[in-house]
Image (cartoon, rainbow, N blue to C red):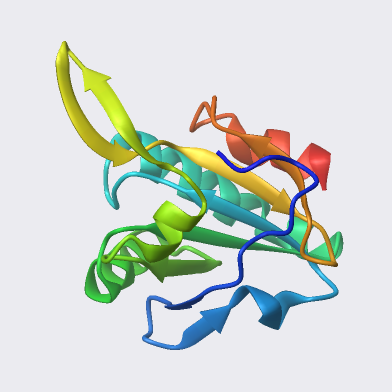
Length: 150
């Protein structure tokens, strides 16, 4: 996980519609950049729907929400449409941004060790500095918690 107080690495990734987004496009706004393991899984769906429900409140506070996983653009599109998600999902199948933000880690699941995305949420300020970093994310609680931090 990257430390608070450090400059967030810039990146360019396609969203669920294939449109490219750079972190630097959002200069002047707060960015909730959250990394999640997989579209259409129970925890990830709860987290995404929570951010979507609160999205108007985030925009009122001058913040944007960007969700990142290693799923494809097509998978993100289906996920967005199935749940009516109101924010941007970024596809990182090559894990460039996932690794730049240090969220690709060894995970243990029922005693089995594998590599995967550790659910992590960053709050980046208007100047591109990480002001909050959390890798102990509870999927269902994260959106409300982040709304309080913005």
